[in-house]
Length: 275
Image (cartoon, rainbow, N blue to C red; front, side, top):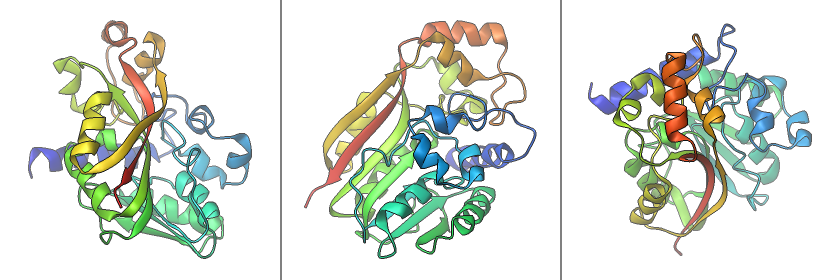
């Protein structure tokens, strides 16, 4: 097993544990479970229409469907689809003539998503197990690629960006919410426990844009940017026993948070595949 495979295995295990009853916090900023969806840009009317379990087990940092112009009959692919909150919202937009595909590497997450899809009574959602660096999806087959705080977890982001370009149809759109960070100290970026907490693997906004451009995507635009202050960043490091493996000494967490204030952000980025 190489380093990238080892990283993915640990992240998958951490997120599987996140579905168990004992953790009180979730990964994208370590806010209490059930609060994450409400603080990530989802409207209360959207959440009210979904199975409660999908909302409670949302680990995202944004609402990638919010700015989309998804139309009935289209195909939407969700990278790192988790418990399925964005799958369900996208399914409502594409309607019975469209299709939504969710890809996740964690079987426990896929099982939870299947439960939520069944609870919602949807027949236009398909769940596939796989890694986002090697998508089990046909080339040029989807109109939209969405993702919610998942690409930062990848140890091989250049492969993810290339896969997005591969699976999109000409003229197709990517719309992603994710975490970016400027100049992470090596002590943080190399900390395996912090990768699952959505910070150690984060790259700069410019590197993100450059990666998309190098993959052949165009019209790249950051639609939204929420820059975190020290108190928000401190929550990434988490109290003891949080769901995604981050358990940092409080004094160290405060020091790192102060150092990173203004340098960590949640962004919503859009790009298109050339026609």
